[in-house]
Image (cartoon, rainbow, N blue to C red; front, side, top):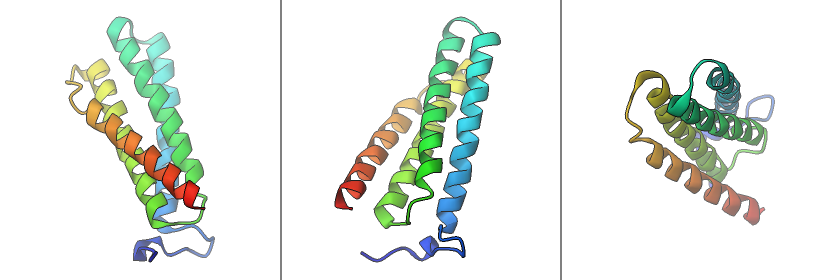
Length: 129
């Protein structure tokens, strides 16, 4: 399978997309820690519940993308990482927005679906070896 041009490895062996996705994943994981702390100490009720859920998904998916970014770049893996990251941003962002700004949670199901698709594509990529 042909690798995308943007996936060319750098001098350190990780693609530009991989480095950016990894950095974004690490930032999302850190944001997840901050959201969990705020949910525990700064809000109550439904807002705390939404924020805890957003924090859980931001931390877990952010950490996963950060770790996956160190693996060799392959088209399906890069797509899976992108879906995990975008899905997590939509899902967690929708819930955090609802908790903090009274936004609707309409994007959460779409974000969740993207994360599920990302995990499926990652499983296929890893099974292919």
